[in-house]
Length: 164
Image 1 (tube, one colour):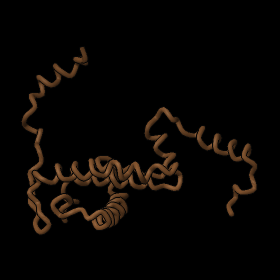
Image 2: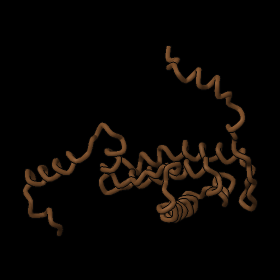
Image 3: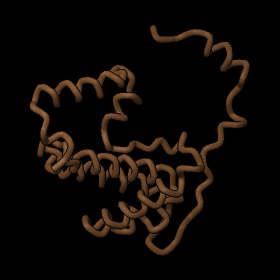
Image 4: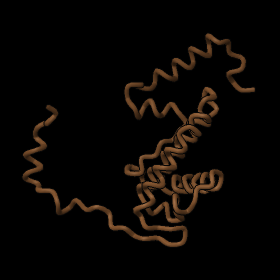
């Protein structure tokens, strides 16, 4: 039993409406906070929250790769050193939580399994150029923009929308 069991449906609906009114549903961040999906923007993640996020993702990746028999050529042991794999696996983790949540209509698990082959292909495509295998890690130098953009040309270009 919980505190809401004694409420009639109209009282419960009123409480839910009050709660939802606190959020701007046109604002993606506000609307996202209504879910328990816990989306992580690795780019914006504060260091203070990093350890918990990494530990949770690692636990899920280890479960996921064992449960779905994902090979080391698709998700190498050094996955956490490759931003593209972190982003893909994090997105899968978020989707898995959302699709298997208690609040799901019941179609989430089948939706997850329908999307899984495409996700595995994306992981495979992302892993292939890395050069890592189950036993070794290859550091790849990330693309560097610091010397390739002509700042004067960029400034002139970026003052117009160029949408038409």
